[in-house]
Every structure is written in C-alpha cells, then in structure tokens.
Amino acid sequence: MNISIVNGHVVDPANGVDAVTSLFISEDRIVHVGATAPDGFVADQQLDAAGKLVIPGLIDLSARLGEPGFEYKADIDSESLAAVSAGITTLCCPPDTSPVIDAPAEIEFIEQRQEEVGLARIKVIAALTQGLKGSQLTEMAALKDAGCIGVSNVFAAFANGNVIRSALAYAASHDLTIFIHPEDLDLANGGCVHEGAVATRLGLPAMPEAAETAAIGYILPILKLTGARAHFCRLSTGEGMNMIRRARIDGLKVSADVCAHQLFLTEMDASDFNPLCHTRPPLRTQRDKEALRKGLTSNGIDAICSDHQPHELDAKLAPFAVTEPGISALETLLPLTLRLVEEGVLSRPQAVAQITCNPARILGLDDLGHLGAGATADLCIIDPDTEWECQPATFHSRGKNSPFAGWPFRGTVTHTFVGGELVYETNVSAP
Image (tube, rainbow, N blue to C red; front, side, top):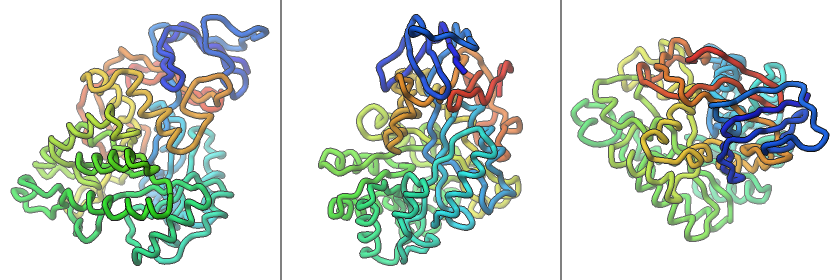
C-alpha cells in the first residue's frame, strides 16, 4: 500500500529535517521525504497532517511487558497497545522474566507473541548469565542467532570479578552490547529512597549515591580490559553521569540512558510516603535532576527511556519500603519528553533524537529511528497543541501505577505506523 502524509511538520533529527513537508511510504518502507511525490508514486491513501508533527516511531530501551511469568500484572497485548497509543513502535524487553530469557526458546516465545499481537516491535535483551544467577555464562552466540539485541544481568550480582571479565569478553567476541544496571548491591543494602535528609526524616532504608558510582567505577576498567561495548541503564546521579562522560572521552565504547521520571521527580516527591514514587534506582536530589537534564545536551546522556514497570494495584498498597518499585510509564514517555521542550531544556529536534535515533544507534538498528529513504516506515503523527490531564485510570496499559496523575500535558498521538501499517489512530483529544 502506498501512503502519503502531506503538510506535516516533519522532525527527523538523524537526517537534519525540521520543516513542513510531506512523506511517502510504499509497503513497509519510506521512499521519500519532500514537497512532491517521487516519480511514478501513486498514493492509495493520503493523510493531511497540517498542524501536526510527524516523527520517527519512538524506541523505548526498557519496558517490562508482563510476559512470560507476570501476566497478572500485564501482558504483551495490553502493553503493546499502550505503546503504539503513545507513539512507541519498538520496545526493549529486559531478561528478568519468569522464566529468565536465557535461551533461544524464550526469545522465540516473545517473537511469536509479538507476531500474534501485531502492534509494536519487541526487541529482547537476553540474560548474561544462566538464570541471572551470576555464575554460568549463557550461550550468547545462540542467543544472538535467535534475535537478541544485547545481554544484561539486570540487577543480579556476579559471583566474582572473573565471571564479569569472562562475560564481557564473551559478549564482545560476538559484538553484543552489554546493558549494565549500575548498582552495588552491598552499598544499596535494600534502600528504597536516596540517602539524605528526606530518608532520615522518613526513617526509610536509604541507598547512597555511591551505590551507583561504585558500580560504575568497578566495571569501567574491566570494559577497558575486554574492549566490550556497554550501555549504562537508568542513571540517576550527576556524578555517575560524569563518570560515563569521562569514560567516553577516554575512548571506551559506552553510552547511557535516563528514565523520564528522573528528569522531573526528586526525593522530595517521596517525602509523603507516596509508594508511586518508589523506584529503582531511587529518586535522587534536585541537584542530580538538574545535572541529568544538563547531560542531555552535554554528551552525558544518550537517550531517554520509560523504564516501564506495570504493577497490579496491591503491589503499591503496602508500606513504602515493601511496595514494589517501578512506574507504569509507556504513556508518559512522549509527553514528558515534550515537556522538556516547553521548559527550554531541549530543542524539539534534540528531544525527538533522545527517543528515536539515539536509542536506535545504541541498539544498532540502522533502519529504525529515522525517516530517511529506505528506512522502515515506523512513525507517529502528533497533535502538538492538544492539552490533556494525565489520568492513569484511562491508560491502555494494565499498570495504573503512575505518580503523574493530574499533571497537565500538551501533545497527543493521533496516528502510529509500524512497518507502513496503521496500527493506532484516534480522534480523541486525550489518551
């Protein structure tokens, strides 16, 4: 099917496009971006995007989808719908499912479910060690052949430094990116809020900044030793980000992301024991928040992700310290990123890059994250002027655990295309 999207404001940072123009799709590929159709192109369908933004489909570096093993929280059906309703066309699934994604069969299951649902793409980050137990390495060659785009041990500890060295060297030999969640488990010591005055006043177990920075400092020399390529996930401290920046200057192959909520919330938001603000890593200080924001434009942070963790209602009903950490965040990733533009933190192209071409580069997905000729036709159309109020009860995600209830946002997704197919469309002014 040939589709033309005309009169839209196309924002494609990867190709330097930021202008009102038209876009042309043939089957599953973008064939041209420009004022006029290419020779011989006849549209079967035309969409007038006047007054709207046309951007590449969002790529989310971390989204837990409930399957396999946690279907009582969510499933691929519900979370894929939530994703495309928010302009997200590619989701990265971490390996800490049940069973753990440590063998080709688990990857094949995810891919089969993706095909059945037929909405967002799902890319799998497989386990670095068997069962995430930190001792025996997985068969990374087989995992790569099965389709994984990287490996991670998530928050699980390794048996010793030699296991880490072997794991990184093995991953490097197969050109696999290692996704590292920097947390020293001993220093973290089960903390659920940032170590500081707020934690002291609340009497809650605290996690110091050093839990993140010590973990980063430990792994960097091993990365240098092995030549491995690493992506540091969910940075929460300004000092941790500065360490990654210095490592990049020193020539290490490293990148980093930040959760959208870390750019807006701080430890003060947990000061009333609000369990919706229980996250891992914890919400940090105002100074950290400002540093992470600055890092978006100073070679410190490469991408913004949702770190989507949908939970059932009961998971957030216990006392703060024993509630499950995490936020249902698919449907707030785009509006929070657009708010950074409103607040003058990022330009519009910079903001779009943080959720499209930058994560595509981290994942090595050359045909996604941009709108150049020949790229896969994953994109979304946004009405940038629609104002709405966040109401988690109306989320498509089965997880309603969001601390952003009542927040005013501007901009809603009206159309989402995956592989040239219209998978989501709405005329409703709010999600």
